[in-house]
View 1 (cartoon, helix red, strand yellow):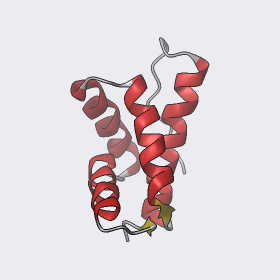
View 2: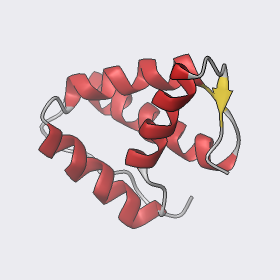
View 3: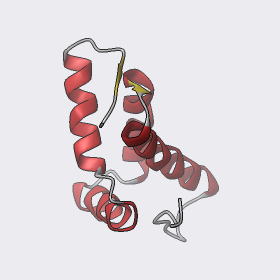
View 4: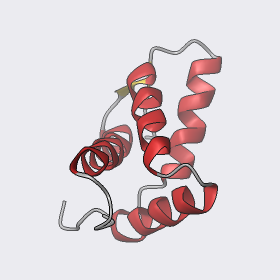
Length: 92
């Protein structure tokens, strides 16, 4: 990883940790497999930091620009995995 995560200086330390953990799990979904429930739990924590769809889109778009990993597609795949009762999923 040769890039930095999109961080807002107004976030608390806990909020920064929640966002970084979620973005890191997006990376893991593209590079390995991740637990579906863990991913959706971290997504819910992320949504507490970015409750507005516009905020979520801004953060995920910024992340995608530096990493090439689509947070939108990862969330979509995680929800699909949950619906299909898949314990884990991968973006590969």
